[in-house]
Amino acid sequence: MDKRDYTYDRWTKSALIKRIKVLEANLLRAGEHKSEVAQESTTSVVTGEDATSPPKKKKVGRKIDPSKYSTRLVAFKLAYLGKRYGGFEYASSANLPSIEEELWKAFVKACLIFPENPDEVNWDSWEYSKCGRTDRGVSAFGQVIAVRVRSNRPLPKKEQPTEAGQVDENGEAAELDAAAEETKEKWEFDDFTDELPYCRLLNKLLPPDIRMLAWCPTTPADFSARHDCRERQYRYFFTQPAFAPIPQSFENPDNSSKRVKGGWLDIEAMRQAAKKFEGLHDFRNFCRVDQSKININFERRVFESDIVEVKDAETALPFLDREEFRPSGMDLPEKLPKVYYFHVRGTAFLWHQIRCMVAIIFTVGQGLEDPSIVDKLLYFEAEPRRPNYQLADEVPLVLWDCIFPRPEKPENALEWVHIGEESPGNQHGTGGLLNSMWEYWRERKMDELLAGQLLNIISSQADISLRKDPKAPLHIPATTRTFEGGDRERLVGKYQPLLQKPRLPSPAEVFDREARRKGFADAAEMREAWSKRREEAAGDLPPKELLLEEGTE
Image (cartoon, rainbow, N blue to C red):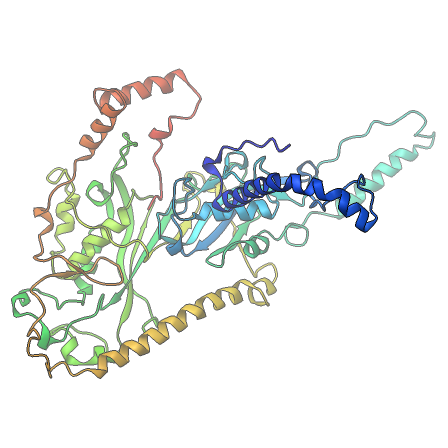
C-alpha cells in the first residue's frame, strides 16, 4: 500500500487532478468488482483459461537509484513570461500556476532531484535559493536560482581491504594500484562532455514560456541566489502614445486645461521624474507595506533610473501621422507608436516598489503632476502616509537581470555557460532554444500584425464629421482618461491631485495593528519578544517575519 503522506496543501495542481482521477477509478472498480467475479467462471469456460491463473503483471517504469549518483550545487539563469502565472513563488491557495511549481515538476521528471513525495512542492532538501520573487503577471529575463541536483560525476570509491594471499612476493598488487592511479589521472571529468545537459533536459519539460538560459558549472559551495546578488535590474515597457488618442474635433473644450493631449506622454518630463529616484532614499511612499515584516528598513539605493527608447520595436499605425490625432507643440517622430521602458537598477527593492514608481512617473508624463511630486513623496517626514494611488499594471514589468557577486564576497562570482556555447546545435539546431522561441514569438507577432492592420482599416473607414445621428454628441464627456500601464485608459472623472487623495495607514500604524492581532500591546513589544526569542535560540535562524526580502517586486 502507498504510504505517502497525503497532506495536499503543497501538491501541484496536476498532481491533485491525477490523484482525483485515481480515487474515482478506485471507486468505479470497487463497484464493478462483484460483477467481474461473477463473470470469471463463465470467461474461463469460454476461453479455456484457468480461472485461478495469476493476472498479468503490469509494466513498472524504471526508477533511478539516487544512492548511485553524486550531486552538485548548480546555479541556473532562466527566463519566463509571467502573464499566465500567479507569480514566481509557489502558493498552495493560488488560482494560477506558479513558476516554482513548473520548475519543480520539470526537475522531478528529469530525475535531477529525488523528493520522497514528488507531488508536493518542497525545495527544503535541495539547498534551493532564488534571487527574486516576482509577483503575478510579472516576467523575468534574468532570474537566478540555485539547486542541488543529480550529477554524472563518479562517486568516490570506497577502499577495499586486501585479503590474505592476494599480494605475492613481487608486489603485484602495488603495480596494479599504480596502473589504476595512472589511468585515473589521464581521465578527468569534463562538465561539457561528461555532465548531464541540464538546460537542454529542463527545456524539453518546461512550458514554452519558461526557458533555461544558462548554468554555472563552477557554482560556489556556499552560494545563495538571494544573498550573493549585488544588483537587480528591472524594466517596465510602455508605448507612445499610451492609449488611442481622440481626434481634435471630438475633444471636449472643458479638458483644454490639460498640458498633454490625452493618450500621449511627455517623455522628457517622465525622464526628469525618473532621475529623482537615483541615490539612497526612503521609499515607504513607493511600496506596499507588508504587515508581517515589522523590522523592515524602507531605505533602498537606486544606482540608475531613466526612460529609454527601444530601438526598432515600433509598429507603424498610419492614422497616428494625421495632425488631428497628434498633440500640438510636442516634437514627435514620423513613425508611431514608439516603445520605451523605465529602466531601474538597485541592490534590492520593496514590495511593489517598481510599480509604484512607474505609477507616479505616468502621472507626470500625462501632465497630471509635476516632476517635483517625486521629491515630495520621498520626503517621508512631511508625507508619512502614502496617498492611495493606483499601482501600474503588472504585465509590462520584467526582472531584466541579476548581477553577482556582492563586493564583500567576490569569490561567489558566477561564470555563466549559455545554451549554445557548449554545443551550437543546442541554440540553433532543430529543437534548439532559438528555434523554440522563434515559434513562440512568431505566433504572437502574427497576432500583433493582424490586429495592427485591422486597427488601420477601422481608423480610416469612418468620416466622423458626418454625424448622421442627430442625437450624436459634439464632444466626448468631460472626464480625465489616465494611463496606468494596461491595455487601455481608465476614466477617473475629475482628476484628484496625489497629495489631496485619501491616505493609507503609515507603516507604524500597520505594524501596531498586526501586533495587537497577535496579542501584543504594540509593535515595539512584539519586536522585544522576538529579540528575546532570538537570543534564547542563539545560532538558530531568526523568525521568518524578521527576514528582509530582496527583489520582491
